[in-house]
Image (cartoon, rainbow, N blue to C red):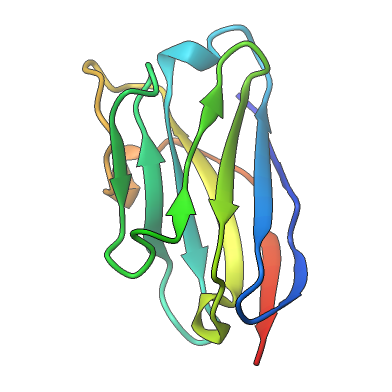
Length: 126
């Protein structure tokens, strides 16, 4: 599985941005997907996850109510819609796929994801 993240850029605080993560292969609908981020000088952290079916979602407390993670299994793509952005959302954002999940779940555990994209930088100015 290859994951290609895109959509990062510079945005002012309060603005919106949508990240995309396109996956190769024919089995995208069997993967749960997640977004993680790593701010400068900090460890990578969970942002959002969506189950294989798209029916189960999970969000970090810091982004609840501001970010959503829709997926389109017909386009092999997962998105991260980010609204009301804040300077502390500045980070490199990574999409990840969990190909081993047996259940329809949206996990926030980084070690459950076995495929990772290259990252896309989001910078939020104040």
